[in-house]
Length: 223
Ligand code: PRP
Ligand code: ZN
Ligand code: MG
Picture (cartoon, rainbow, N blue to C red):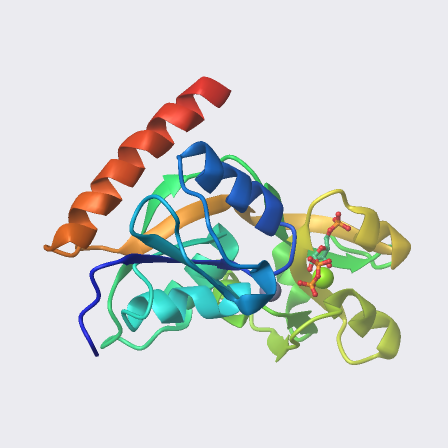
């Protein structure tokens, strides 16, 4: 890969994290020139550019070195760490960012007789987080079938393609609308600043350290 001298940050193109992430970067003194539909936004003051992508692609882009940092949900980062092959660069959570809070939970149909995780034994559970779900099932010694879906997971029990689900819960509105009941929380999530475990040793590393310092200031002011 061609060496870069500008820092590149990946973030969600359009979704719940987009506006607060941009706002946070602005507060850190970063402003971007091009329009957001271009998916690549050139940084005006500092040598820091933005890449707007699907959130699920962010950990992979950092691991490949295409981006230096990413603003992404802990759920997406941890799912990547759960499932990535061993030769992929190790990623780490540099800072929790305090927005986009939600949880990854198991939910069952409201009329299901559920008392404990063992009640999921032999059932099919639909999720977009097979790595995290399998990890939790193993820890609970539960043998269940994991059905991986890219989205609209909450509809699966009604369609008969799964008996329970494991998905993100924020307000709980989607669960209620689909007559589901939250039973177990697997992960408390929020937006985080993700990056490689080892910072680049060139100017980009210096820029990251500067950014982290500003970020800490901004986060402290907000608390
Ligand atoms: C997320 C998540 C749930 C819903 C939870 O989906 O997958 O479906 O939000 O939020 P609630 O508890 O406030 O209802 P999102 O709408 O972000 O779309 P996606 O599943 O396609 O990513
Ligand atoms: Zn997503
Ligand atoms: Mg959803």
